[in-house]
Structures are given as structure tokens and as C-alpha cells.
Length: 247
Image (cartoon, rainbow, N blue to C red; front, top):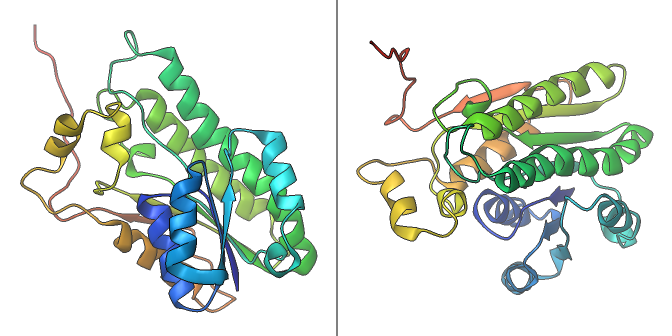
């Protein structure tokens, strides 16, 4: 089994790489931070191929996939994990640079990687695309504006891929995590560690390993079973009621 994981330098991506490597799979670990990828290679050995890549760069994605060495080229599983939230301002005061980065990574980067690897899966008539969405794609919250919009795209894109792939043995799944303790909040708050840490204060959030286990379970189902969508949250988290501003 060959697994291609984006955003593999931390959080969900690194945990997913470790989970599959532990099973003996070969893993293409893609990410922007080369030093972290090399550390992962030293930890997991030659079954892991570090691939320094910014998924927002369409030409770089195409070149990276075309240039995979033979022993890593026939990718069985693509995990589109690279993604981020930036900022928590209301739309009227949000930073457009934050919006651009989320759209470029969460939407465009995901589509670039999918389009680059999907033809090979279809030609081999096997494969599985696993997209990491979010509960924010279904449930709005103040300041979630563009982040939630990008994750709603991930949900609909995943469902439409299933429709496009009817008649092949290529599967598509989407995972929608709730609150999970990774570098997510640190990135959202532009490196403000105190503010990021406060997000998880007093609760037990999901872990990166929880998501890695979920990905592993999805792809290990019998070939005739497709898991369309899984939504998971820590028991400390629930859905808010309607908000009303009274005059």
C-alpha cells in the first residue's frame, strides 16, 4: 500500500503518516517544512518518502506527482489533510490575506492534489481519496466565515467525486473533525501561544491520533464499502443553539 499524505509535517498529517508506516505501508509525506519531513524520515525509515511541497503551487504539485520514484508512484490512498484556519474576525473586519490563504490551501490545494493523483487510481481501478473536512463545514460560528466555507466545499467536492467515480473501484471519503488539539489554533491566531492554549483549557479535545485511527479504519473497510462522511467531536463539544440579538 502506498499512501500520499499532505500537510504531513505536524498534527493530523504526521499522525496519519506514522499510523500507516506502522502497518508497513509506504508513505509519501508532503509538506512545506523540509526539516520536519527529514525528522519524520529518520523516525520512520525508508518506507517514508519526504516530499517538500506547497500544495497551493499547481505546477509544483503536478511535477511532484509526475516525479515520484517508481516504488512510490502507484498511490493507493490520497489523504488531503493540508489545510488551515487563519483569523477569527467577523467578515467585515477580516484580513483578506487570511481569506486568500485559506481558499488557496483548503480548496485549491486539495483540488490540485486530487486531480494530479486521481487519473492513476482510475487507470488502475483502485484507490481511495480521503479528504479532511470539518464540522465547521456544516455548522457556522462567529468568525468561521471563509474557513467554514472552504470546509463546506470539501464536503460537496467529496460527494461529487463519488458521483463522478461511479463505475470504478475508487472510493472517496470525508472526515469532519470537531475540536482537536494540534497546531491548528496556533496557526489560526498567528503564533499567539497563550490564546491558542486557552482554546483547549479545561476540556479533553480530540487528538491527532484519533483522526489517524479514523482514516485507517475508513480505508481498511472491505473494497465494496465506501464510507461517505464521518463527523466526530470530543464529548466536551456540542452544537450551539440559535443566537438572538435583542434590541
